[in-house]
Image (cartoon, rainbow, N blue to C red; front, side):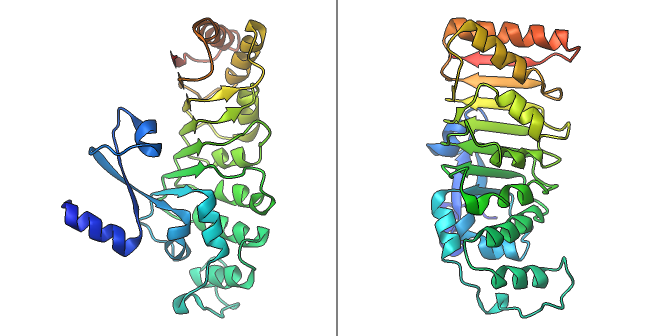
Length: 277
């Protein structure tokens, strides 16, 4: 891809791309709030790349899903190339998946289930971000599970969401090669460690980053110790980061100490823990 300003602008117009420039030293701020001119990362909104997902475009590496994207899915209409009447097509072929998708009513549970299976078949999709999506939406309850079949996903982000009582969406982290998970401006239950332990059945997950997050039932030192104990259950984790979360200095020190002590008790390896108030 050419790097001139004019060419980038034309690419945006032609392909409806959301282009975000990301600084490696300030990942969360550039992803959600600002633009920095360092390493270029192209992130496509789900509603703008449906045809590319359907046709298994191997250039799709980062997809972000917002409420507006789900509305775009409701308005989806197949073009002529997607108007495939091919029930006899090979079961796992693109034509068969197009046929199955077009047989369902847009925006229904079944439609999103098929779309999730299509996303899981993208061979180079590295990162998926859910931003402000209702985690308890009935029509997405099968979508989460289908996405978790992706072999290419290595990073999962959740932003601007209340996930205190939303275990279903977290099953997406069970995609077998997920290594990095970030929660940005999310509300989480103090048992989040236990929930992840219960939903993640692989040993690829190594990094958890909580940025500007709030945790329920973490007001007392005893509750902080319990919070740390649940996080300590994640055996494959090697790095935990808390940035500007709703924890004061005393709570942060208690969290770090308790996490390390619990890991020793469980006979697990060292975890790097960073807490920035």
